[in-house]
Image (cartoon, rainbow, N blue to C red; front, side):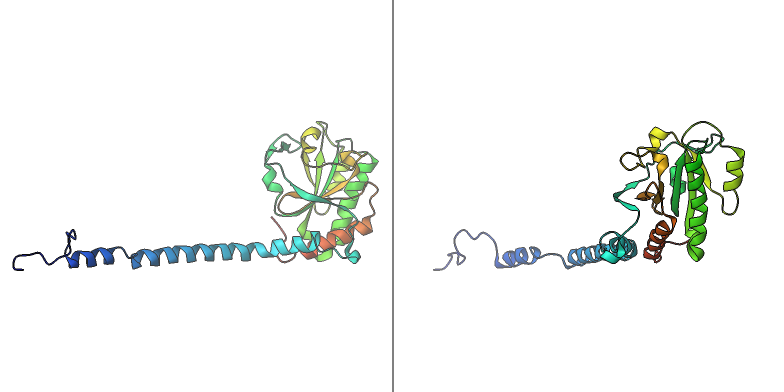
Length: 235
């Protein structure tokens, strides 16, 4: 009939309006490209971090997890390793404060004793020097540390002995504070052991009280060999 509306009842919108609505409901190609680039960037960053961490993870996995019978350890492994307390109250013998973070970056062989330094202390300080020298080309990757746990002054003859060759780093720290990080075996005192700390500041090994230097040397050699891909001499 002339004058009648040929559109479907209630449509209200022209066909070209419906077409426009359909087009604008599609996702924006520009936004999709941006999202893809962002996701790809994140994956690349994660891959770089994984590659950087891989040598450290692999060496520790090899040493701590893959342990055939032939690789038995003499010293006791500390699992999990204990992180260096960031607020450990360290000072020089003259009382100047020392940042605990300054101990990181090098393997440490640690002795603990009061300033009087009895026969056991003298033996540990002597063994520190002998063990380090026995490492040959790797000796510069190991530092010697003596934590003095009282307020007295070490004897001049002891200080003279440990200043020869590569000096011992001597730091004062209250015994109670140090005990929040290092710990002796059951039935022993802190001063009965030598302790091994890794370059990240984690205590990870404790030598037996009656230490066998040759067997401890083999443990140190294994550690240095396992970490050779990521640890370098010096801080």
